[in-house]
Length: 237
Image (tube, rainbow, N blue to C red; front, side):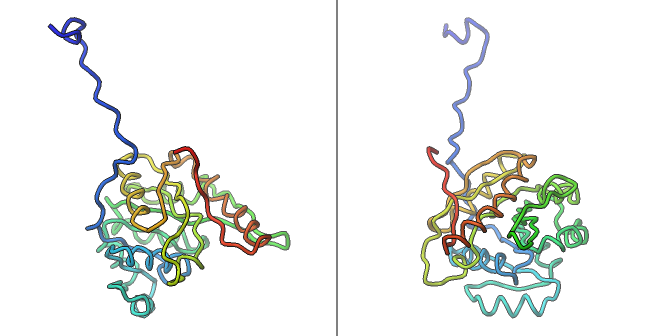
């Protein structure tokens, strides 16, 4: 008789390797706000890595034009069509249009992984500073507006300049990924890892999204002082 039979307790399953991530190569990724600098850069990098990408805009013609410029099989559509056709949807719209955009897409985004990368920021003579939404963060606002979606947060600290530069082969940075379900954050981490040089790192639940979004204000200050395109690296993991 084994020791587990003697005690009546079952042996614990081995802990899941945090770097054992799913194959996401067949997923269609939609980028709302894909005609803006950040969204366009993410669309380009994911498509260049072999991901199927659809960029969305309020005007289908604008999205189609931007997609044609990017090439790499990227398609353009209005926001609703982009959301409907995508498995994972990245929200890269300006903060002032964040709530309004998501309110109109509740049906199309139901059941999907939504990745919010919006940074609520203000600017004055002293530079960039963080805003705090009533819900706590942009990601938490998204979760409140999209109760039937699987909201995560990621891709906040990336330089749009580097993302869009075709001469750069690798983006040397980590991506902080937040969310409520491990299966969902694993998917987002795996998407980040599709981009050469990039790594997705789990960074907590959505209640911790505010400080991740806010850190962009500090990076803007770093970039201005040092004439750089700074990113983040997490050590010892």
